[in-house]
Image: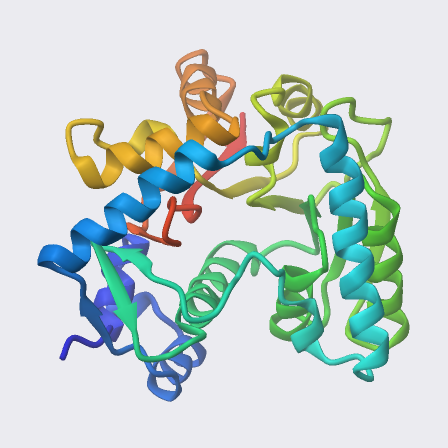
Length: 307
């Protein structure tokens, strides 16, 4: 039975096993990464389920009612966080569902571990944060939601000043509660990425988004201009990126259909590549992990810096 190894994670991240820290290796060793590839008639049934879901799906990213939905969602996490006695488990976003069919290496897979996706991205986030954010005094997450990523950052780098920015108040309130409970130097602030306020970043800082630009429904230009003006030392994005799918492969084609049906952002990476051609930024890394949930892959990452 297949099982993900340190080499598999390194290959997914676009690096070598030596580049994975001891902490990453310990997580890999402690969690269950066994899985089975779904083949034959079972795979056909999965594809049929996906296509029916795409046809019936009515959620529209960026619609006005989605603001209220995000506000209610983060408020639920806030309530759970307080009632649980400030448990990190209450910060896990609800879109990370357990016991789901997943996408890995161009195949649908069934895992033996109900938290396979969460454990996978825990390894990924640990590697990504250690790899890219270690040199900086301050790190900002735009679209921080529950603070799920910031708590991990605070654990990795307790000396850093961290900032969680989001466009709904319940997220900012949750970040405040995390700080009150002693989980690190984390401050929260309201921030609308579509119409950025006059908010100054610290000089020696890095920024990142994690499944946030996808929700802008293509309206990212003002945020990019904001970053170019603020000139953080490093920018990292983990986002579904339709341009890296292969439309001639059925497995990728259905993910593209779902991406477009929902209205997730397109052309963000091509815009960064255009800015690089104009010598305004330098792109340091682009990597599709070839891992995701049933309907799409949300963990492509790219890293760049202003010039």
